[in-house]
Length: 363
Image (cartoon, rainbow, N blue to C red; front, side):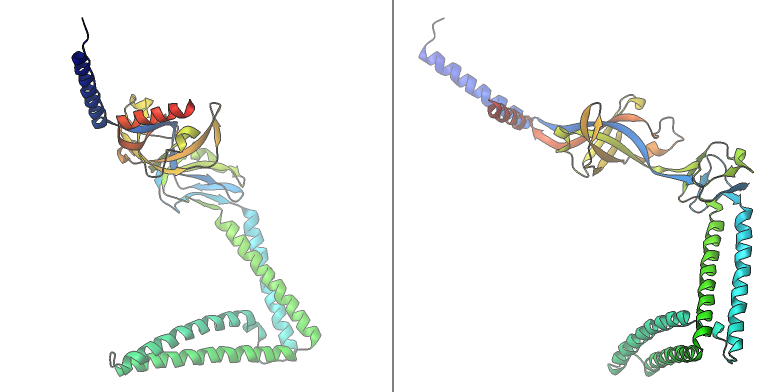
């Protein structure tokens, strides 16, 4: 076949039209960019039940796999040493109080100094000053409202009365402090020193008593959050001695599940917070009908399968798969892949152009 100029022009025209058609077609065709991140599902809220004080298990108040609420009692421990220490501490406190009274009686003062605690009175005065400031502001506000005839005279006078009464109470406390200070100043140096030492011993003993009471409260083991109690035969712990730091169970909340995946450096730059995610889970025959969103991107790298990767925390949004009554449900340890939608509806021609530019840069 002889190729003429006319045929060449025809062929060129057809090729140009075809090229334009292909370009238009590719510009209309769009795809989504994705990043696939392998990882595992994990419960967001797990609270270990840890023994905070030594003791023998006296009572078991919860059962394995039971749904419990925050502050529900799980175990009650028994520790006779703490009970004995509390009793002895109370006895020493009573002795110190008697000795303080005797010191004051020796000086033949009518006012019992033990009934006045300077520190407590000062704290009470500070609170009363705050209260006085509050009622003063209230009084001034109502005075302004009364002058503008917005409220009645009774409301204004009531606010004024409360303010004046608070001022009198503050003044009364201040007088008590001054009087107590004056009495203490009259004590000779030896008596005052003896009194202060006994007072300090009393304060230390009271602090010790509070510490022992806190330890006694820790003998009652409570749940720190709501959830299901996961334990291994709690009844076997009855009358068993448990030490501080022993973990006897976990309280797990199934209503919030996350997915922890790891993305390589080439992919992590395209991952952003709140991006849409679907999951490919082998346990569910590879179907990606579980949805989520990117919650947090870690900055600390980790080595996974010999590759430096970045952790990506993804929130699972498909709540129906938290129901453990279903035949298929998510639980901690299930492996899968998070398919993160990094960009939506990108024209194929744009991706081809990016590839051409990258090839040109390399060459």
